[in-house]
Every structure is written in structure tokens, then in C-alpha cells.
Image (cartoon, rainbow, N blue to C red; front, top):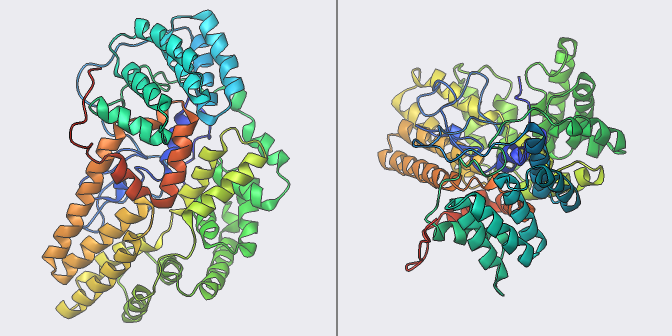
Length: 493
């Protein structure tokens, strides 16, 4: 059954924690020897093909994953407050992160009226002032925050961020944050007690009905389609709505997303046969409309076959033709995200950017490559040495096409296929290269995870991040954690 998606706005910035990292950190669960959350990594389950990790339901496909174990060592000072103060602070952080400054200030005022020295609320206040360009206010609140959290790296980063934003050539928020973080020696904020989300809270009653309200306001099926794909848990009528939309879908990405959303038990059993027919007929039509798309051809060939079963000679011949196709997919991940965000904003979704990324996460939930890997396992023992090398070349070439995609999920899935294919080919140098690339990406993520960037309640940070990672996630990540130029000073937190 598909994992439920958290609401776009809950627990401070944790809605973004799940949705922002739709791409960043989604993929390491596919990597050998390690895995990630939407920002980190724990092995998702037993290896099924000798070349990587999957759980019993198939590939990890862009839904929430567990975080890496917390770094060892003493935890930071805990900042305690009454439940009412925590709730107001949480709301302020949530509104600040999603760009609603008016509501953020209202909630912040409530929190600070009750607890004027509560450091996590003061941190949100600084972030909000920086976001709005109120430099003198940010400086004044920073002094108060330093008094309550002396020596904390979070405060040091905010001071450095403020200085960079004041410069005439300030550049983007992302660059300013990165430069400040590097200057401080790349501190690890994953266990921060100052940043939002440090204290788990029950669901905010003020947010319970946002999905129903947005659904009622939606006037088009295109908008309701995105709302259903972004929802925490599909209601039966929403699942049926999605199924009924399939025949009209012309966008392959939306087809893959709906197929992902309706996996498992989302539909009543009485609809299973109709769903199989509807999805098959639409897939055949999409393949005709997009004959260059390797993803669609692979899904048509293997998507409904039994995992782990032996590939037939005809299927291997067909796979060879699939591997020769020029493109993995012919759609734009970035354009799909932007369109979803636009539609969700129109109906007042509290954090349309995070909700749009929740939709885009489902686009990465394709099944074809996972089935290919499991069926390779069931086939290897029956092939001649030349036959095994042929299957290896096919698998490697499909993986190489995936490696060229912009998202980390696809890059890591592609590298796993390349690794398995080169192993079957007896190409030890190619296998070693793929392993080195996997390990390098894992290390990049491990370093980046230390920023806990999704917990910083500055809307511009995550807005810029989302736009960048939907264009070219891997390049952006590698640039973000690249070594600082020689001579960069490290400030003492």
C-alpha cells in the first residue's frame, strides 16, 4: 500500500521536510550499502537482486524514508515551554516557511507574549525579519537570541547569513546560506533543539480541514487531480476520481503518478479488474504517442509481469530494442512541478510548493526498472555466458539513460542498473566506476544533510531549493557541498 504523504504544512517546517526532499535525499535508498531519507539513509529492506536494496513492495519511490541515526555525542540544550507556546511557535515557523508573513507574525506575537525569552520563537522571529528585509529588527532580535542561546551554531549562522544578505552583491538565499554554513565549518544541525521540529507535536487542529476546503474550491479536474495526488491518505471517492481520470491523461508523468497513488489497497477490490484494463489501455496509447520514451516502453513490457520470474527470449529481444531508444522520458520534471504549484496555489493550499513537490514525488514511482532487476535475478542462472553478457549490456544501457535524468532518484536507480549490468558483462572497471559514483553521491548527501535546510523557516531558502532541484538536482547538490575556495575562514560558533 502506498505510504501516506504528510500534509504540506504541519509540525513547523516538517511538511517541507517531507515534501522539499522529494528529490534531495530520496534516492540513496536505492544505493548499495546505504540509504537515505528524503535526506538520509537506512537500508529499506533485504536485497533482492544482489545489486541493491528494495523492500517487499518494490522500489522506494519518493515517499518518506527514515532518517539516518542521529550523530553520537551529547545533545544540545533543550528549550522547554508550555504546549500553548510550542503550538504558537510551530504555527509561526510553518507560516514563515511557506511565505505567509502576516500569519507568521500573528502566531509569533502569541508565543512571545507568553514566553518572551523562548529561544526557538526568537529564532523564527530572526528568520522572518531577514526574509522580509527588516535588517534592524533582525539585528535587535539576534542580540536577544544570543543571550538565550549563547554560543549556538544556529545563531552564528544567522549572523553570517544576515551579513551576506546585507552585501550589495548578496546573490541568492541559497548561496548566502551555503557560504555562511561553509564559513562556520559545516556544522551539523540535524539534532538542533533551536530549529522548528525539535519537539514533536500532535496535528494542529487549525490544519485538519485544509484538504477538504481546497477540494471544495477546486473547479477543474486538473486541480483536483493534483490535490488527490498530494493528499495524506486517499479517501475512497478520491481514489475512484483518480481512476476515472486515467483515460483522459495525456501527460506520461501524471499517468505514472496516478498509477503510483493507486497501488496496493487504495481502490476497492471490486475495481481491480477495471483498473488493470484502464491503466493498460492508457499505457498502450501513451507508448504510441511517445515512441522514444524508454520509461513507457519498459513499463508496458514488464510493469505487469511477476517480479523475480525468468525473462523469456522474446522479452530479452524486446528489452534490447527498449535499451536502444534515445530518451528515458520526454517530459520535464521541472515543468510538471511548476504547473502543479500554480494550480494548487489557485485553490489556497497552505504550502503549495511543498504540495506540488509531493505530487512530483509520485512521478518518480515508476515500476519498470525494479521489475527488470528482480527478473534479471530469476534469469541469470538459465543463460549462457554470452546470453548473460547480452542481458548485462541491455541493463547497463537502460541504466545509463536513467543516469542522465535530473533527479537523484533516477540517477541512483540508473547507477544500480549500470552496476548490475557491468557485473553481468564481466566489466569490473565499469562496475567499480558505478560503485564509486554511488559512493560519491552518498557522501554528498551525507554532507548536505548536516544543513537540516528544510527546518530553517525562511521561505526563500526552500523556494529557491525546490526550483533548483527540479531542474538538475545532482548538479545542484554537488555544487552546494563543494569545497570552499582556499583561504575561506572558519568562524567559531
